[in-house]
Each structure stands twice: as C-alpha cells, then as structure tokens.
Length: 93
Image (tube, rainbow, N blue to C red):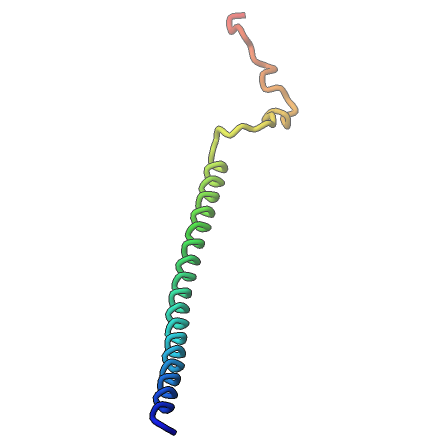
C-alpha cells in the first residue's frame, strides 16, 4: 500500500471511532439526564397526589366534625312520646 491509501484508511478509522465514541457518550449523558428527569417528574407527581389526598382527608375530617351540618332527618321521629304533653303553661292555675 502506498502512503496515500494508508492515510485515508487512518482518517476513515478515526472518524468511525470518533462517531462511535460520540454516540456512546451522547447515549450515556442522555440516559442520565432522562433518568434524573424521570425521577424529578415522579417526585412531582407524588407530591401533587399527596397534596390532593391531604386536602380530601382534611375536607372529610371537617365534615365529620361539623356539628352544624344540615341533617334532613327529624330527631324526634324515633321518640314514641310527646315530650311536651304534661307541660303546664300557667303555673298559677
């Protein structure tokens, strides 16, 4: 082989090695960033769902502890007797 052909082979091999190394480096850096970004997105989603669960729990606790909550049932429905039956209106009679 002459010097010119050897030089071209060296250039082609150098370009191939450079492209391979660049591809590998880019793949590794992209994977690392992708993993870090995926972890960050997962943490953000978990915080959002945690805040939603916390808000729901607070709302449910507030509703269960509210003494002024409107009930549609009559508390005297279950009572068979009239509590005001023997009440005297005028104590001087």
